[in-house]
Image (cartoon, rainbow, N blue to C red; front, side, top):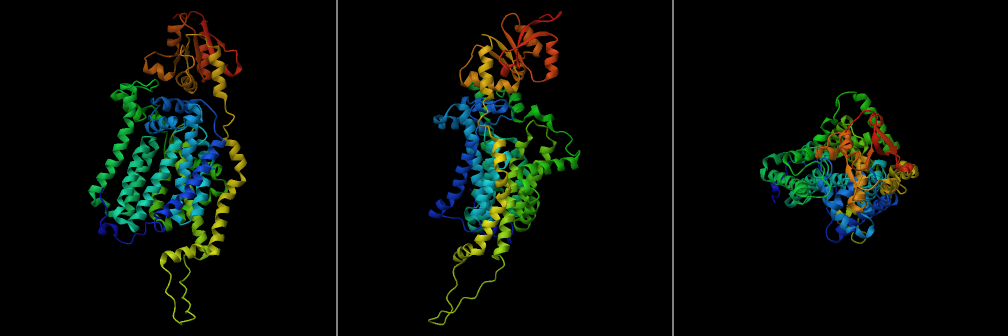
Length: 557
C-alpha cells in the first residue's frame, strides 16, 4: 500500500476535512461501536416487524429464487447480491424458508446502512446523538423502510452507498490525524465501490462525484500515480471477480435458473451492461420544471415537513464541509437527474441514496444550530482562575479534555436534545401511517395464488407466462420442489430458446399437452381471445390463468 508522505499529507490548509474528533482506539473504539450497532439492530427489528412472510411476485420472487440456487438474475445480473444472498440463505437457514430468509436479508441490510449512517454523521458533527437520530430518521423514511420488508438488491445498494461515503470521509479525517495510514481508507472505498457496481449499476453515477471529492480533498493526488493505480486495481478486481459468477454459473456449472445467456460473450455484455433497458432514458432535458416539481413532491412524501429544510441543510454543509457537499450534492443531482429521465416501474427505489444524503445534510444543519445555541464554536477561551493556595493560575486542561468538558455543557446537551426532537418530530407524527403503508406482514397473495394455480393446472402442462408470475412459479418449482412436470415459458424463455411469439408456443403445444397462458396486457389478452378458446381457472385468485382449450375460426397450428 502507498502511504501518504509528510509533504502530501500537509499540502495546504485542509478546509475540506470534517471537524471530527480523534479516532477512537482500543476500548474506546468498542464503546463507539455501540450506538451504530444498536441502531442497526433496532432498524432490522423494524423491518422484521413489517416483513413479508413468504414468496412474492415480480422481481421480489426472482431475488427469493436466484440467490439460494446461485443462479443469474435479470440485467445487470446483480452478482454481488446473488453471492451475498446465497451465503445469507445458508447462514439464516434456521429462520425459515428461503423466501423469508431473503426478505430478512433486506431488513438486515437496511439496518447496516442505518448503522453506518450513525457513524458517518458522528464524524461530520461530533455528535453521537444526532448520528443516532439521522440513522433512525433514514430508516423510517418510507422508501427506505419499504425496501427492507422484502427481497430486493436495492437494500444492499443503500448499505454500499453509506459505506462508500463513510470510507471517503474517514479517509479525509485520517489525512489530518493519521496521514501515514490514510491511503488505506481510499483504497477500501475503491473496493466497496467495485463491489457495489457488482450489485447495482446506479453506483456508476457516483463515479464523477467521488473523483471530484478526492481532488477537492487532495488536489496533488494526480501526482501520486501509485496510489491512483492501487485504487483502480482495488476497484476493478472485485468488480471483475463478482461478475465472473454470471458465466461460471450459467455455463460451467449450469445453474437451474439463468437469465439470457451470460456464458457467451454477447450474452454476458447483454446482461452486464443492461442492454435490455437501454431505451429506458427518455428526453432527459425535457419538462425540467415538471420534473423538479415531481422531485419536490417526492421529497414531501418521504420527509414531510423536513423536505424544504434539506435545502438549508445543503447550504450549511457547503459552508462547513465544502468537499463533502461537493461529493454528496453532485451525487444527489446526478442521481435525481437520471431517475427523472429513466422509465421504470418502481423508480422510487432509485432514490435511496439521495434519501441518505438528505439525512446527513439535515444532521449537519442540526449540529450547526446546536453549536450556535450552545455557543461552543464561538465562545472565547476563559481565563483560568488563580489557585487559592498558591495564587498561580492552574495549567489549562489538555485539548481532548476541553472537548469532553465542552460536550458536557448543559446548554449544548439541551440544544442537542431539542435538535433531535425537531428532526424526528415529523417522523413520529406520521409513524403509524408509515408503518401501515410499508406493512407486508399479511401479504400472502403470491403463496395463495400459487396454491390455487398449481392445484388446478393439469399434469405435464406448459404455461405461457409473464414475468411477474413466472418468478413465483420458478420459486415453487426450483425452491419448493412443486410441480416439476409443468414447463414455464416466460417471455424471456421464449427469446432464449427461440420459441417464437405467444401464438407460436400455443400452436406448437396445443393438442399434445395442456396449455395455459398468463397475460396482464388487456389488449394482448383480447387479441389472443379472438384466436383461441380461453377458460379461466375456477379459483378466483388464479382467474388470471387461462386454459387454452382450442382454436377459433380457421386458425391452424
